[in-house]
Image 1 (cartoon, rainbow, N blue to C red):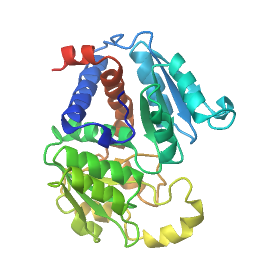
Image 2: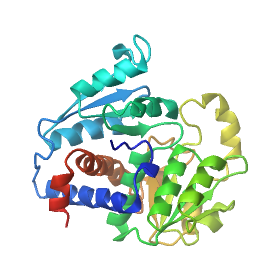
Image 3: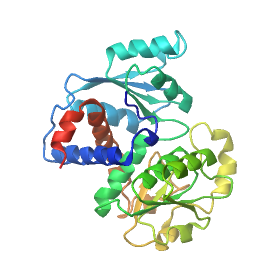
Image 4: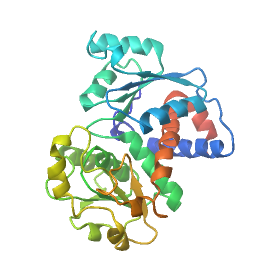
Length: 311
């Protein structure tokens, strides 16, 4: 059974298929065509964390594909009223796939362990694969291709950075992280990426201006993620020189696009003048969450249609 707990669960050719399906479906939607590719299919959204983009994009995407979705909150008693095994196997009797937005990555691993239904990682503390799919789709549409593009992440080496480093390795893109000491990506994650893709170009450049000097896309995220609120003051001090602002953008090529996974703390990791600038693809990027996830859902649940309709 196919899961997507991280992008390690697929190979580069499969990744390119998903992105291609997403592009086809987005083009069809732009033309007013909403093919019922997943008619009568149902997915469950099992969320431990609050969400805007992940929840709405999956629910709307399934609706556009002719299917439906169920939002499952704390009331379903996941891991509380019954065993994980019973919960997951019963869920597999009702729905075609589950999207899980969890606090700990072990939670999505527990769901997938029983192979009762496909499990999609909607976000964990380790990685955010659906976000990375949308990000690369955005780069492709803004710059014409993602091939050999240079993505620079200015900020914390967090779960989003993990997935971006991996997807860049898979697609022969360059990835640079610019962060203060002590806020790098997890060594174990980087080692797994290096082992799977030994030719990957993944670098750390401490000086943000030097990092973005030949960037095609400049990406940032909040300095303090959910669950790290006790570190807010410490992180503000550590990341003070890593703000994506007008001065930093002047050090970058004029064609460079600005990305942020949202929600943003405006005035901290990014300024209003940059996030609202003509170089910003942030809102388009948020919209592409739905298109990328539609591509993923069709690839998982109706691959025959996908293979017949790829351009």
